[in-house]
Amino acid sequence: QVQLVESGGGLVQAGGSLRLSCVASGSGFSINAMGWYRQAPGNERELVASITIGGSTNYVDSVKGRFAISRDNAKNTVYLQMNSVKPEDTAVYYCNAHLWSLYEGNYEYWGQGTQVTVSS
Image (cartoon, helix red, strand yellow):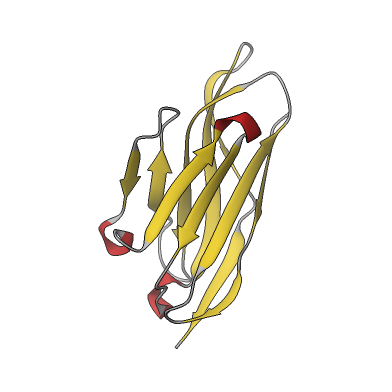
């Protein structure tokens, strides 16, 4: 059974920084790509950043140059360093993992979400 547990969300002033973490726990699976999505009220969930097992990254245009995604494969952990945050970054941030297991093959898993609020 897989669990994705996010941490690091909270309230921050515009221009400040936050670091989100997501730890995957459990057994019987391997992790491929991981990523962070966000959903603001009234908006669809959007991909913020993703990272492959080899370290290749992808970002939505609105966060390029401000956010950085990284991962520690030994710890099954993915991070999102958020710098120069803006009020429009306010959203619930979700960790996402693409997994593989012998019984389920390739599948996707989501964390419960962590709230990030940026005050102006």
